[in-house]
Image (tube, rainbow, N blue to C red):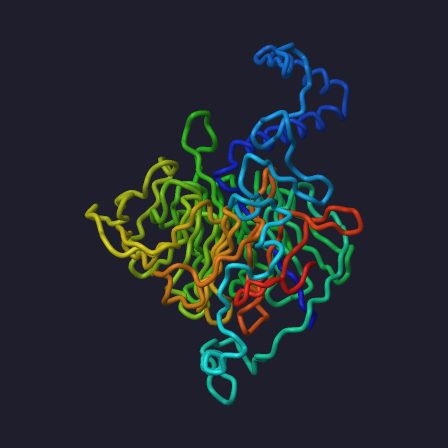
Length: 510
């Protein structure tokens, strides 16, 4: 079976929200222009719509001499006029008044950054091949977990796993436009490996058979705006797909027919100016419990039953009033879930201890579920205390059901358990760091490895998310997109990196 690359790039971070909103508005205006330009009567109507707004804002550009209308080149980073920063071809030119754009540390540029020049710089490998004791202990642990050598596997889906190093990926490059707008989510079908399911900015969902290249199916009206997550629910039906959207809904879609069934709508009254409005971002599914977990824009975690016709959800204030952009379920213990979001944290929860409560859809935005306290998540309102886990260690208050809180320095794009044993944790942060915890039981300590990687960006893109390779039984390889480009025969291309989580080394560039 071919080794396939999977890159899921999803929701945006809070640090660039203002720029994102501006570019979203520009794109929406351009959509409106394109629609009206198709016919003369519509063009006249568009003129009447835009003209009253032309006098609302007047801008005068002053040059160095103070004269109006002078066009002066300025640094996009600090605004100075004596230099420029940004990409010059495939090379990023740093602003001399700011730290290195890659590692965020002063004293060098991106080109000479030691984290770029030397692979694995600043990281301690999980174990050395020369350390026979560590190597033998790791081998014994994998045998116990995966069931090699005649032992029973801890993972029910594993049969005769190979603990050999995986071969290099076969990368087939092509450009084929499937969706009408920017891709916001991507998922390989778990059993039909030739199918890729994706969602776009306008709420469309596409199914692409890449073996046949030109065979695709697009359902353009599943949602009314960004389709933030797609997740195939093979335990419901082989072609059942759960999708979450910025329109505040979670839907179950039949990929064969395109029929969608509403699971929850956080905005039953629709959008009103100045009124509450919630969006749904990260979502995942748990086959053993038959549930779907989804995170919204107000830090609330929702639990849904796709088998029920009831469109109400049970929810819990898991994070501060910021987006939950990533939700993941432990592969061996479905009672353990992990969430991550814009409050700069990744958290572990025991779903059995969470004080779930019915969501009050009349006031869902900016408020907690009825009967649950925002600070503690407890129905009684009494504050709970416990130990926090953070990137630097520490203690603090915790929510009921919260097992750990891995604090980061910026927005966390994603947080995932390793796919086979769930023993490792991989997080992607907007501080240009990918963090790895080698042992789930050690999350109260700093991460085992902080890998410097180009994750942040100064334009509106679908954020990068490092994901484990589900075919790697060693649970070492992960795949992630990169912002800072490489020079390929004079062209600047943004690559997909395949990296080793145990050594922080780059294995392959796609």
